[in-house]
Amino acid sequence: MMIDLIFQVTTALEPVSNDQFSFWSLFLRADWVVKGVMVLLIIASLWSWGVAIDKAIMFFMLKRRATDFEDTFWSGRTLEDLSASLGRDTRDPMARIFSAAMREYSESRTSPRTESALQSTRQRIDSVMNLVINREMAKAERGMAVLATVSSASVFVGLFGTVWGIMNAFRAIAASQNTNLSVVAPGIAEALFATALGLIAAIPALVFYNKYSNDLDAYGGRIEGYADELSAILSRKISKGQ
Image (cartoon, rainbow, N blue to C red; front, top):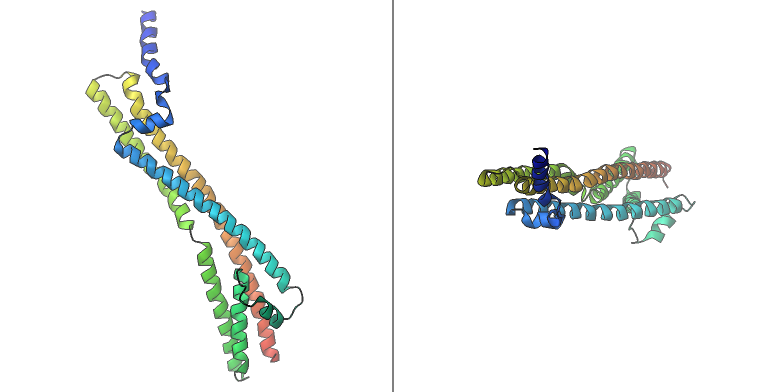
């Protein structure tokens, strides 16, 4: 009796351990719904990786240009000389903040020297810099919604594929009236494969989103700090009538 039991278990496991359960075979054997889920998750994963690589390059360039501009800004040159030397070369967000503030400052030098006029000039300079900061931060945030969506939705999309694959497995059992692993395993394997793809898409996207969110906060604080310093410098020049 024990020999018969071992023979039945071995027979049931034989089809499950062959090469038909590779990832490609699982994809080809899945029905159109599960295939659609798998393709969607693969596209989402590639999309999130593309955004992540783009963000890595962007933050590297932003930090390097910000450091170069700060070195130039604090080199001891006058603001007027620095503004003239920059010209139209304002690829760095800090340089764009500086150029916008200097344009407003230059245009206001011909205004009356009353206290209300000076206060209005300070407010306009601050407003211009805040507008540039908001615009630059909006540019830097592009693509973050993709990472957030992929990290949160991929798990549920993969779960949908899992549920659908298990339903297919139950249908195969009911149709064949056989609980042999050769009948049950394909649907279960497809379901687990969909779950795995969902996790493969979601986990890196979540890691990238958290990492670049911190980078955004740090960079935003950096340019806002620079804008505050520039505002203080220009405010002193305005008060002195320079």
